[in-house]
Length: 157
Image (cartoon, one colour):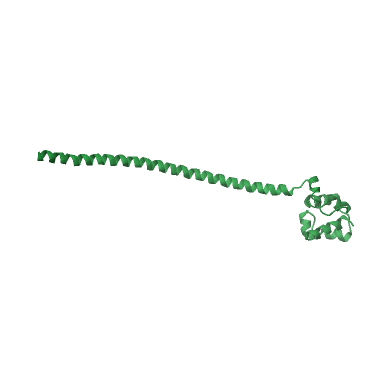
């Protein structure tokens, strides 16, 4: 069995069609069907493209037909995988976005807190001024009430 037949077997196993596989691997439209019809060999460049994009294919199986179609879990240690890095990158971008939103929220809350502190300070000052005014009014009241009483008591004597 040729590598092109193994590629077709992989496409079928993954539930793909030739066109989607060709797009994923940057192959020209109809490439797989033509190669199958001609029973052609695949070039090194094509094989490298496929192995770079289909990270679960066992390279030994693709080239020789020996071994399993898919890499075993133990084989993953031997090969560089870019998919987890992409997921990590997307997760990192999401985390960065969340951090940015949280920083904006903290900034808005700090501004709100400062405004409330300012209002509290103003209200405390106003409260003190009102207390002083009440005290002064009480003193005036005491004087105005006390004076007539003194006068009345002097008259009565």
